[in-house]
Length: 311
Image (tube, rainbow, N blue to C red; front, top):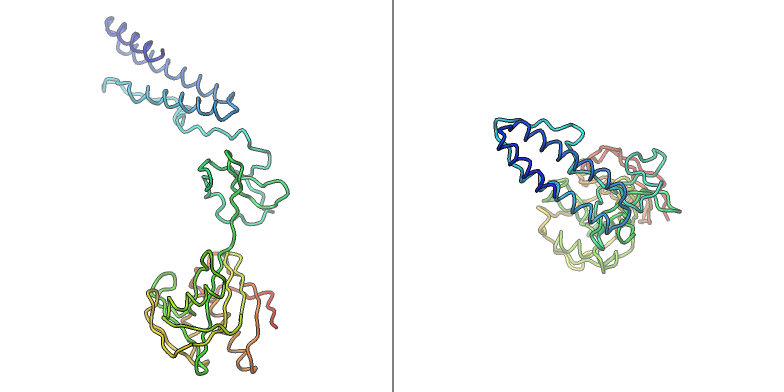
């Protein structure tokens, strides 16, 4: 009806030769329609009504795109309507716990939770709120209600011993390209920590190993990682660089290149190992690596070790 009224108005006024009046009338009618849609949007409270609202907005937008005005006229829309097509509808299920715009500084770090915009199960949009009985900001689906929890990544690897030396690999990928590391990587779904450590050693050093015992668990809360490192020995004295390594080499304890290690976790693990060997036998270690905020993955000095326990 609006488009028909606009067309009639344009034809009528064109016959009278009043083009400026045509443009003025058209703009007024469009703005009135925009106000009508904007006001009516606040009354929608269900998903079906939201769908109707989206259809009406698209219709209004199509009117703007289809209207042609002579180049001799310039349009200066009211600033209040500049972002009209981008109006964001508040979810009807939003609660007073929603802290997406101003989270409390006393809350635990939410990581990248605000980057989760869509539900991984149904594809619906998410809101960011603290669920009842919890303390952290979560991404909650506004359609199915499921919560997307973020959990730490587990990194597993082997500290391989051979002839009183340890096996290290020089990284051929970022981060920490060209620096030395124990063969280690992310644990895959469907494998145990020990199986993952053996696989990573095979992939990065082409070495078949036998696990002797767990050696260290190191938590790095700031980056959401937990390392589990196993002591292992070579089944056969053969190794070579894998796809992610440029070199593989055995180092005696006093030859370990501490200044050229890839990550703080490697610095901590190898320092603990050297101390144990000097004391006579390896122990099991637990600790928390507190990374300095803003430090890069390759900054092997930007950390402190807390809660160190050994047995």
